[in-house]
Length: 405
Ligand code: ZN
Ligand code: ZN
Figure 1: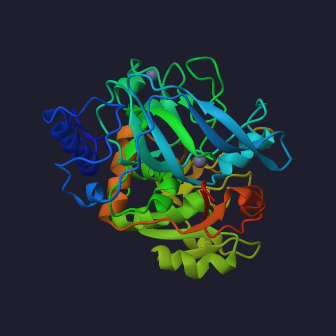
Figure 2: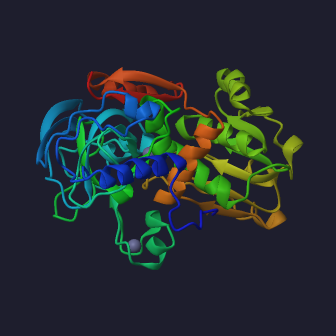
């Protein structure tokens, strides 16, 4: 995985926030949590916008859409977000992307959960208050939060920037036991409090609605594309053209690879090419799989359900890897034929989101290459309906909840 080695690896946008912070400190206004609504040193386009008003130290009341059972409709729920700890930031949410993981979690596909539960782990919003020693952002900073909100910070994985693989278990953004013993509640809500180390700066050129889906879908595909050195001269395939897959095509093409999409939906072929794919394989019973034997240096499999991957493996070159990032129902695991891997010494791997530094790297990469998710905005009341469309493969390509609508 290509991670920045700089001791301060965050993005130029984070650095911009940091320089603003430094000027706040210099002017004696950095006493965070105070009602800093404007700053005389603010000169950038971002600072020129009207910042959100600061809201004090909390605790904060938030409105969310909660599931009360594995199958019932979501209902409004008022929850309390904790008072600011020293390194916390309070974020007024604007948007939250709808990820297939949200649906799997509520349905109990990945194990039993407690209800009511608010899900959503593609959060985007604006910082409105800062803990006493929070120093990476300022009131008004545009930020995102992804799949995790804390980790142990001291294990080998955390110190290497792989908080997603924390040996002591990280704290997921929802349905996870928080440090106070409560169960975390996700981003289908109006407000959240998060340790600043798990908050990512959103570059100015990226709309907050488009930043949301980057926080899970974007990093989940970016990380393995980097890990398997996708770039110029590489011929790769992306299996599944949904929320993750469409971001994978755009990012891999921007990295310089030749991208082929494998999809069961013939109607998605024009979109695949528009996103940057050079070829599209429509998967059906008459597909000429052998035409593609030993073609690909890497295959990224984004399909979040069990399906037959046996025809796909022989399309890998010798020693090449198929990496799964889509995770289906635990009770319905994927299977593959025993002979399929030995033919060309191939490997099946898995990958799960990415670390915080790498998430910042991803969103800065997307800003640099003008990569944006294809989104459809929905109100809070439309989430459950949107879930049905996601399951029916009708999303084009990411629903994003306007949490204030
Ligand atoms: Zn997700
Ligand atoms: Zn750890």
